[in-house]
Image (cartoon, rainbow, N blue to C red; front, side, top):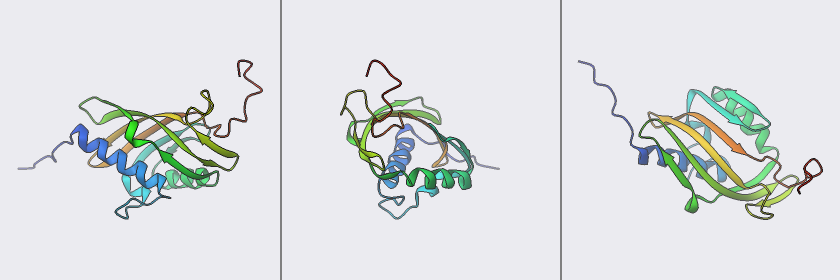
Length: 151
């Protein structure tokens, strides 16, 4: 008789995503030494604005290398995130950040229209991220203002 692995709870899925975000903020290594890529399934997909869709861990690694060349430091404000859970593998998290980009610093709410607010839609199964789609304004330093007359 084959026994299917037990499903994950929403709290377990949230814990995986929180640990991943801590690792991202800590230069790619979690507090327990887990490498940031080890939070992902081999065939995971990851979308990031202005980069596109990365399919598989090798391409996700390339995307992180590309992003790492522009972001010197990032801190996700995990104490104030909003979770949307579904009771399935799919969940979303909305939050704020601050950090240092090669073009300058950013902090959510400074200015109010600037970078730092984000939303991520994740699929977590078997304690691994299968899918991560991140939605944010990648103009961290707020330099792309000429194209928007209301700014």
